Image 1 (tube, rainbow, N blue to C red):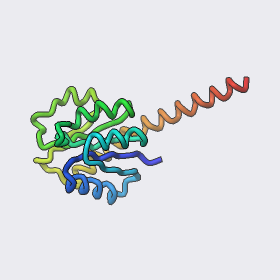
Image 2 (image 1 turned 180 degrees about the vertical axis):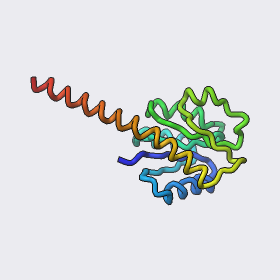
Image 3 (image 1 turned 90 degrees about the horizontal axis):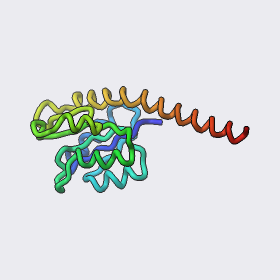
Image 4 (image 1 turned 180 degrees about the horizontal axis):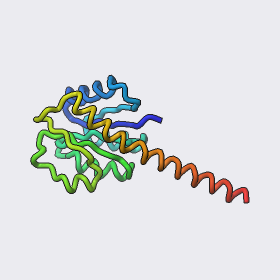
Length: 150
């Protein structure tokens, strides 16, 4: 099952660019984009999300870190890449604790290559952990079935 990537950015051209880069990357991923925190939470409530690409400033007084805090409620293992034009204002330690694994600065060299390199790097970390969780869950279900039979 491919990993699900959710792109949250209030600027439509930026969001569409990121989605286009992901869809044409050759990566085996399920990609979705939404403009704001509310839409992201509605999506996360009914879909698995493995990786979130979050804009730091979501425009409506919300920010990517606050959104990540809420997304963790639905998906405790979610990993995030924070995209910001305000890298100097970012709080790396707090962000790391919450699941942010990379920062991309819109004011620096944010290119298709740097964006996809960051996504690939996180997918390489997510996949083994996800496989382990699925294996463990399968084992738990198997044990329950055996216990019912016995």
